[in-house]
Image: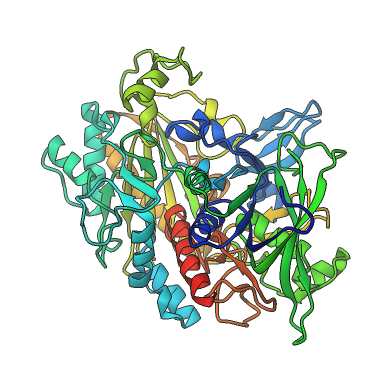
Length: 614
């Protein structure tokens, strides 16, 4: 823990893929870094190391349980079967007909509250953004260093790729995040009608039609991250690149990277169980405030999104000073909260809460975006495949045969994170030549998004669920708003779905759904569509059940000094010296379908930018 007068070159708030990797990289350059993390270090827990574990998303000590709104309209919001309420006894109710004592909470949206942040609890997808998304940032900011060719160099520096031959152009092979490809899961092609369904998706999407099972497996091994300008222009079915270490089939962990940097003796200090309460600023002679440190509170479960939270508990207040810069990397929900608590944000909101205005930055907490994920789910009249009784006990110890198999030889049910296929596809309303839809298709899954208790859902062999991930959403209507000036209280979060471009987004998802239904028709198995609800219109059904978990852009990047944006192309906060934001909140719009690899990439870019300025 930092003493009251401790000083470091850099003070960083948040240890996720933005702040954690940046802290480790700066320390290796010899700079002293103090990293503030609200959670503990659970990086050796099976819940975080196993690719197949979903338990890490549901509460302490791994995650904060945010509940968000999808719509301002209460009636529309509560049409979602995943909408969650809290009963008087403290338990959750999920569904459409809550009991009388239930208090509405919203839609479950877990975020990492652990060393490594959300990269320690996610599905480890490592698909890189379309090149056009990087070029958009370069054009918006006028900074050519954001072009896809420049950003590819940052990706190569951080990546240790294990699924293509060493030396393959466009990939790195000695970085700190290892990428591997999901092994071809046998379940995807296990039965004739499963094979026919997948084959028909190839055909309907316009991809190469496989000539045999062997050929299909070869096609699945194609690389979505290859060095190719048209990689998102051509329909592609593939198995995911993931941040999983090939030799151990364990999460390639940024938390492990930080711990290794500390063990090697570099000047990185991590303060765990430390909730940042505000950035400390001081006036300068030029009238511009300057970030000089951070105030934080020490204690476990201090934040209201933590299931251990007690309102009457108290944490010890400490401060730490930065000789060079303060960097906020709290993530899309917490970064705008921290800035606003520090007096950096929209003047009207701050003044209404009695927070002294340090810098009027209207874009803080506005323009938040997310991918829409619209579930298309069918229930077949017969099982897609016959399940045998699983030997897995879910105890993740020596009494669990599947855990022993994974620990001893990195194989078995616990060794993979994704038993299905992914695909890119372009609808008629894509705003460029790139795909605007991304399919995540999983057999034997009957859940359609995030809700408390979802990790306990057992496989159902009659179901097949595809999440239609909408890229290019173009709906910058989300907001992160303070409820109070208490740093322990989670903010109000509303994504305001389908406020802009609703017609185009719904049409794209409808076209994608029609493609998949044609493939199911050709599979030779009778089925019933369960989602979107066939009893109502397609568009209404999609609006009711769409969800997301890739929030970005609540402190978006743009032209320097433009009040419609929060930071410039060098991550510097408008109106404040020595203060940057480095996390997914700075993306001007959602970077494709999966922000995990892109966020690691911008952290690497921030590292170079800070070194140049230093």
